[in-house]
Length: 493
Image (cartoon, rainbow, N blue to C red; front, side, top):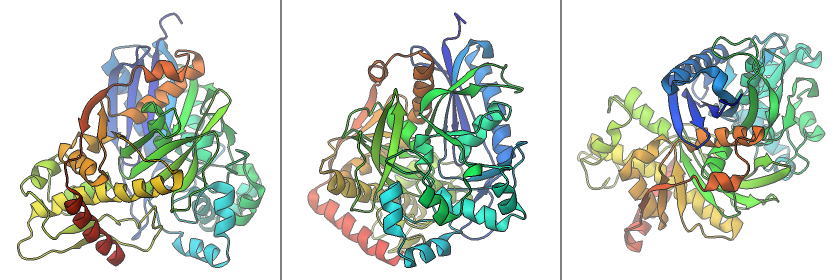
């Protein structure tokens, strides 16, 4: 074990699986990525094939190890980070009962509306820190139990396992031996008490979810189990770090002190602020959530979620055919100096915080005969950034803190045009790290801490380095004009 100085980080995202190999000096020495199929059985419905996700994980593990030029026996630990609210149901033999219902899926909108009409939202928010929205796992698992033949009876009999994607991966990695989740993922289900960090009986009763199907809730950095029966890995490698993707990114950005914040641009965009060891109840439409639990200490976060960010660029590529690859959007957007009157509201899967309007739909406003594909591309980028302004404004109101600078990460931060507009509309510096894949790094850090490869978060903080700082240069008058057009368009979405 003297040579076991590497951590394997599995970042299982909404559109693909990314695996990184990180050494003890916090250097990424090998990576691999693989997309998988998105299923849209009906408008507003989004599903994933769990077996295809697992195959993508096995494949990317093998390729990442080859690219890192190390043997699997050199791994000290495995960390997992994942798309969070995506909901899975499988039997004890590891066979899925149905495709996973993805966090973007809106099929339970009517059910959420019924619960709100019954006056349940205040109780749900007080208990879980969340709102009644199809985004979260509780209503999705209820749908599966209601619509998959025999599922409800089998669940009551203890024959089934419910979990978010982290639970599915640990179950598969350990040869079906371990059914577990961590507090950050559990806090996204509508089923966990935000204060006790345990499954809440009142919430289980409200959503009709049997306790028998639930995973054990664990810390974000501890030994969950050992690998067993895998093609790409030998038996016995510790799985010792786990967090939802946004919490992992907060950890990977070294936001360990209250007030420190980050924004991740992935399929959606997510702004999180570390608020310390006590949750902060939002009055501005944000979520209270667990950031992580490490070494017996729990940190909480305020979170603002925009359901569509990078997914809008994929839509321009795949749906409209305006670009051939996602990176082309910056060049196309740069063909015009401004959007003119065009505004894009990225409500392709409803509006998240602070609006929580599942019925909203995306719109381009202000189009006329002079509108070009460049205007549309630029409006898509600006729409992403304007969503983040709304989240930051709500976070300032809730926390009573200004955010002096924003750490950013995710694939879209390589887009300088987007990052400059983000700094301009926020009126605050945007700081891009040297390694923008901080979600993967966060999972690696948690796993390394779990086996003693790193000794403290402060050791990790020293490894964090900035790549570029985008400073605001937009006048207050121009910023106000952008925000006025945006707010008008949001009302029409």
